[in-house]
Length: 202
Image 1: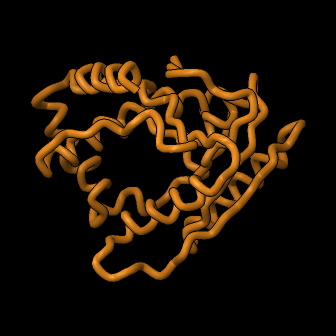
Image 2: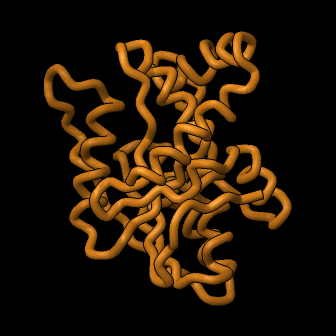
């Protein structure tokens, strides 16, 4: 089941990466909302492939979405990781957007972020809101979005770099999370309580 926190505006922009989460959310929201797509190009071949995947999807539906594309600054400042730079550039674009934007964070993202931040002293929850950016799907499992896409014949683009454990997020996802789940198989429920409390206090 796709779980939603808060109210989603009738007119909404989805920050769509072309991956399964965002493609499923675009399709899900389009049934009751006026959806636009914002794609951020990272200046990579993978971004080219994702852009094409979104375009193909948009060409197959009866009423195409408004599809906007933006490019980030590709030069990475000294002392900043590629992951951090790309995130910072994406949010510059998001925060300059006039309308509310949805990002497609789910409970798996929240767990990984909490594990990651705990390693630096304090476990943090991905917040529901960051200025005009809202994250209403934080309680939904990634597997739910995968199943939605499969059940509704939604194609998506797989980012091959997601398997590269030189990136911290991927190392946590592929190397650490199996051990975390062995220690606490119910960690999603634990973090879901924190996500709900964050929303209530927001």
